[in-house]
Image (cartoon, rainbow, N blue to C red; front, side):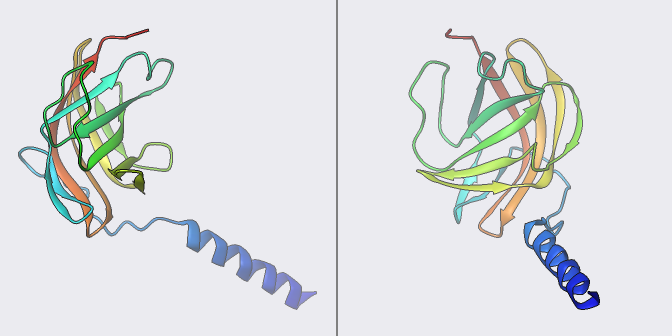
Length: 154
């Protein structure tokens, strides 16, 4: 019985360790424009947007961050991008399994839970703030942003 209990405890500890996240990334948000590495490529934020309708009923905006030009209703730029859960209320928020960011390259996605999002202001048309997020050394960003809240198309 003791061996069975020890084995069960070991299996539980091993399974939770495999599912955990590390806090190895810095949570200091760099001054300046959001920038870093996405899929091993230098990346700098140029434009970002969220749709009020798609984020309706949730505590977060689901925002896409681009390194190229973007206007609401227009075609999305090609290349690496980020999808970030940005809170709708100003404040300082740690990333987690529920509030995370995704490094995107084509159909490949890397979900990061290391980092934080700071929301400075939210209006009907813009969200400003900063973030730092890390998946690995090839996917890490830090800096400040202004997002456009696109009008609902529904």
